[in-house]
Image (tube, rainbow, N blue to C red; front, side, top):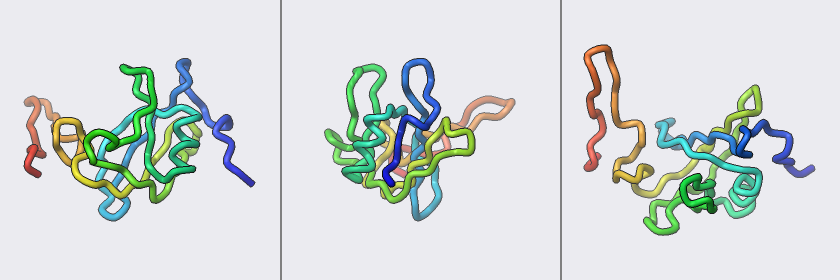
Length: 119
C-alpha cells in the first residue's frame, strides 16, 4: 500500500506546515511548507523538499547551501494538518547560519537571542 498525500488537510493554498526536527537530539530546527508533490518527492528521494512560497517553486533543502536534510521519518499529526520531519541535518538549518530557526526566546520583558550564528 502506498501513501496517498491527498488524505492530508492542506490550507487554501494547498500547503501543509512541516516541522523539521533533528532525529537524534530532538532539537526543533525549522518550519516550512510542503504540498502534495513535495511530500512525495521527499518520500521518494529521502532529501527533504519543501515548497517555497516566495519563489513559487520546489526547494530541496541544501541544494545551494549544502546544508541538506536527509529524511529519517515523516510523521503526521492527529488532525492530519501538520507534518513532523525527523531529519539528519548537515550544517545550519536556518538561512541565518544558525543550527535552528528558533533562536529567539520571548518573555514579557522582551526578546533574547539564545542561539548565535557560531552555535
